[in-house]
Image 1: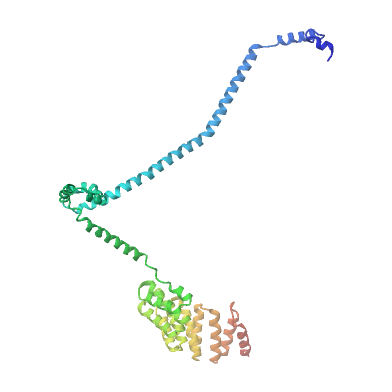
Image 2: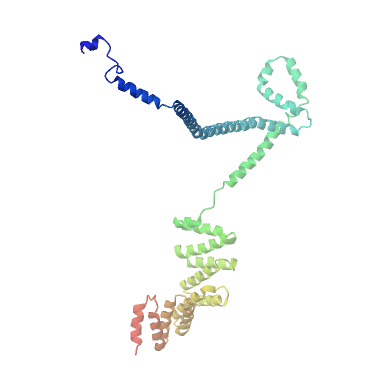
Length: 368
């Protein structure tokens, strides 16, 4: 620093070179100043700042109000739940002994003892050793009190009486928890065929749809697994006898026809199929019965009758292609080549023709 700066304070600007200019500028600025407008602007800014602070406080209050309400509701619910959980425990502990005590003296003749019984019976059981150590007069005073109190004598019989329902209830509960009957089909799938057969026989002793299903499944088990065609036929015969209008009658009839054919009893099968066709139970199975009769007659070399049965089966729509093919074979065997060739041509027009190669070969032979 210079010696001038250190000697004293510097000169003020107003007294300097540009002092007049500064003083003139101040006077011009002071002349344009409006004090009332300035105060008004200050007051407006203060009011605006207060309103803004109030709005910010309200925003915080509104945003925090739901949390406060939720906390209050949670506290109320917890207090109610604790009160509700506490009350039943107290009532249960006091009510159950009182109920048992009130039921026991009800068998007595006197009305006054029940009020004394809860207070005297329990202390006597707990304090019997102490009573023995006391003097004789105490025992003498207790003797007259025991005379009018007849309930102690009936109390022992009450315990067996109360125990009997418990035993009965226990027996009922064990009876209700008895194991379920075995699943016959599961036994058959597991390879326990004889056990499954016995299971079906036991089920068939009942009635209703369960017995029907048991007989039908028994026949299937004997036929398909045990290779016992006669046993299966006997089960189906039992079904037809016991349930002539059963829900499985059609399935049973068809299974019985198949078993008769398997056993070589074709005449019996024809008679039974004829009975079924003449009855009202054939229904939708009529065409299948016609097809089955055609095969039986064809094996018996009764080709004309077989061709007629196949024609009826073809009209019924049951395996239409097969019926046409086997009718052609029967016509060819019966010496009617023209009709056989027409039937073979008709067969080759069918969408499903598993015997197409044989039909073409036979048709070539039948052409003139």
